[in-house]
Amino acid sequence: MTQPAIQIALDMQKSIQSPKPGLLRSWAIQRRVIGALLMREVLTRYGRHNIGFLWMFVEPMLFTLGVTALWTLANAQHGSNLPIVAFAVTGYSSVLLWRNMPGRCIAAVGPNLALMYHRHVKVDDIFASRLLLEAAGATMSFVTLSIIFISIGWMSPPEDPLKVVAAWLMLAWFGASLAILLGSWSEQTEIIEKIWHPASYISFPLSGAAFLVDALPPAAQDFILWVPMVHGVEMLREGYFGSAIRAHYDIGYMALWCTGLSLLGLAKLRVVSRQVTPE
Amino acid sequence: MIEIANLIKRYPTRGGDVTVLDEVNLTILPGERIGILGRNGAGKSTMIRLISGAERPSSGSIRRDMSVSWPLAFGGAFQGTLTGLDNLRFICRIHGVSTEDKIDPVQEFSELGRYLYEPVKSYSSGMRARLAFAISMVVEFDCFLIDEVVAVGDARFNEKCNVELFDKRRDRAMIIVSHSENYVRQHCTRAAVLDNGKLHTFDDVEEALAIYAEQMQ
Image (cartoon, rainbow over all chains, first blue to last red):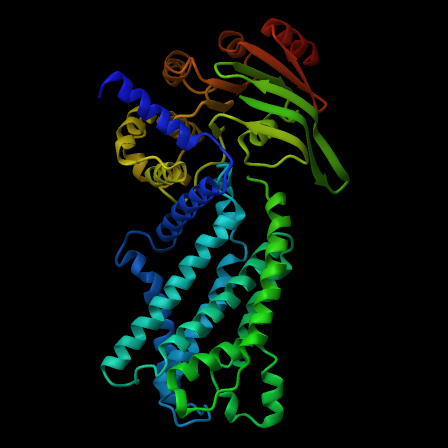
């Protein structure tokens, strides 16, 4: 390279690094940081041994398969004549989607505290990378299992794929907003981490994964429809099974929950971001 | 240029807020090497972390017109469960620079050998320091924040650092925290003393050293 060319290259490098305000630049930095954190998460969680990052969706897949097998063996009653496999895959996949996100964001800052020595690494980047990873893992698991079971004839293809996607996105939104709220809050008090485990465990049977709302007595229906996740799962099943079931859901109600959780979560995140001190 | 104006940093403790830095003002120009002196717990590392942007001030402002390194210190900056090489990759990624061409220089400078492929948590503090220093040299910054890390260490590493920092990168700004009077005397163009949260700056390094020596009595 000639001397001026080197100088230009150096100037370019400097302009990349020197802090200049601007939304586009911030976005570029944030993308880089989230990308770097994603790689870091994948490496520390799954490593480079055996199947490596494939664990990202093999792990949730094994969960779903295990539950599917158990429910099949136990001949679980879920209040419809839907095939149990299809019922378990749609139900348990949605549980994994909304439940793993808060689980991964609670106490997420601690293991990354040393990396926060680097100015660009912020709490929201840590959450974003973990949320993306969880969402991607749960989605790939759901899609892969669906494809496998559809191709061997244990499940029928979804009647309304767009509705399935919409419901999946709603559940992801719910999980992500809950995760940001609880993840931020857990930096202020350890109680969140302690309570999350029993709470997520108990909320599983209430989340609509293991039953159809239509099969419940009317009084129980009124009660269970207060639970926001139920609406997402019902919508997902309507998209999947369509006319075969009668779904009960109000997506506006669920969106209201998600909006509320998002606002609270982002407010908490803003407070906590200022308080976090790198080790 | 880095411009620090009316910087205040307080930390909450059980006995109420403690003011670590109280109305600190400082301007750092390109090519300046500023030594920061002060007793243990005077707030030197806190100041470095605030300048780096790793922590945010309680009030006041820090304006950075040049790229600033992370605090090159004995702790922090690395993910312990990742290898030295993966930490290098991480830092290159967040700064948007390529990695592969930087492995050899880092290997050569840090002299980590096969330890570059081992988790950082297995490193000694000296090895961490060498890695931190080597990575900061390949990523390149306009201003280096050095918290003790070069001043300590064996003679050979010291010599290397001197060549890389004060010879090859004499045009860069540096903020150097050190307890070694000689180090500050040799390498700094200016010096400042932190005392009770106040920063006293001196254009004459000897004057700062004298005040510091007085404090130590």
